[in-house]
Image (cartoon, rainbow, N blue to C red; front, side, top):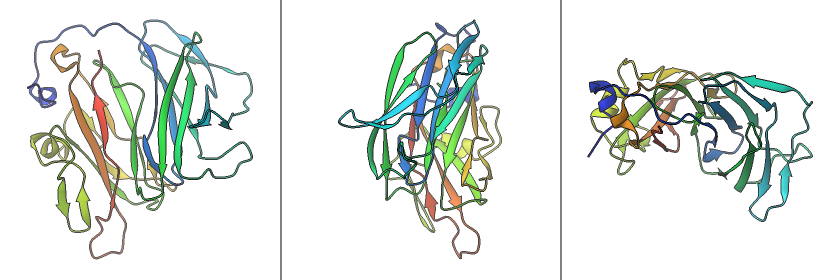
Length: 251
């Protein structure tokens, strides 16, 4: 079985597959108060244009929840670039939406539609999303959100062998299994970048990134990422664990 460790070990180079323009939305399971990331990545060879608010949010019955009102400004997205914006978990009246499932519809350049489902979970402490599609030959940011731990340390990790039973730490369980990829992700390497750092004043960061070489054998490989935030001033600071995110490498 192929594993994500090939990223570190290397393999024969090949050209990436068909270029695309696509969207990502997340975290798929987000804490209350964690803005939802909406991103459009341009992996085509040509410049494309998007509106600055290319999405709307509905409930599970298809009723509008949030339809952003934005000026008609064209945002050009260069080849290899990603445009991103945020839904701040509010309705059309600016009120916080309740926990539950929501459908986020994204209009891509050219008019194609993609729909994503996100869950706002009152029990979640942190969440992770990719800012754009993870694809061979690209470097894509990860969006980490932990509203309860602003300005605190985060440590991201990855695992190729799943999320259960996880790794027991002093303050809880990291939802990633201990395997060679997890150990590699905790060390500096050329693929998993900035996996340790500080969250900003709202408890978010887009510093972590996945920089994929164009190795054809990696297409279709899946792995999970998650992070732990470390609030200061506690006997065991490792107490805030994000929901895990499954990532599949695309051509």
